[in-house]
Image 1 (cartoon, rainbow, N blue to C red):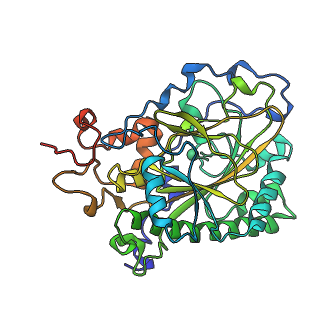
Image 2: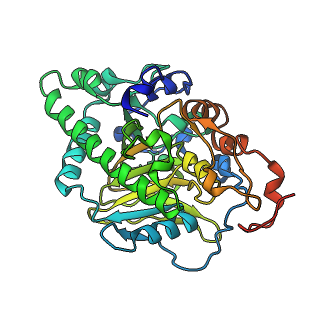
Length: 381
Ligand code: OGA
Ligand code: NI
């Protein structure tokens, strides 16, 4: 398969466009609020959406390490360590990943410049009601009864159009940094995909869409610049509500302020502490499907704090929008049937936009599998 073969397929942004998530509330200026409005005050049940069921996978034995594994990509054992982390956590941090610290500082400067503009100015780059890129709330906002204490700027490929609105003079220096960052993430994501696949006993050559040299040139991606302003009442606020990503994998840069938490069964919400120069890598729903449930897409959320603004950049990485993703043949067999039906990213985004955290169970093949003992060698039928 070569680069031209996907040219008639919709791009990822078109896929998002065909499944708009409607955002019903007007954005206030979070930085000017002295008190938490009721619409932002979460109670225990407001995030109930996270009751996702995971078929036939590890029950997360609450044993072993209680912090998200940090993996050195130069470690000769990296593949094995990644496999273990994916199986037991669905998330890990990487260091020695080859992305220079200066790039994180630069992308953070872009975010800082962007989010510190006055609200009316930011709204010049607002996501249109049915649009996908630009400034606005988190896309998942419409699934929850309460609002989230965050702002998000979504980028597909080039931010030029919106950056021209924000910075008529200076747009090109900001654009260059974003493009450089995307380039670095694309490279790293390809490398991580190879490692994750290798840990499953799959070669990137076993995936048609990875290309002849397994370089994943046709992969699609989006970038989220997220800002979580300091909050007058952090205990009742939610930065980003519990969700899984619809990606294969997501690479997250968080500045030195904590807030990200992942759900670990048996242990509850576990904070992912910022690691200098480190990146958080979490499995998404499509990798969960591809791995036939062996590597679960991890549920995560973001909390806010009273004094410091938190900033993060999420690189959302997936296959070409119209390529079918299904449990890999090497991972299915008589004792472990395919748990999910084939689905394209495009179609999956549609299911997610409608059913949110239930989307994964809706592409599940055999609902009764839930009641089976949670063991990989279980016999079915
Ligand atoms: C996301 C996300 C986490 C963070 O953008 O999907 O989960 O720390 N972000 O901002
Ligand atoms: Ni996420």
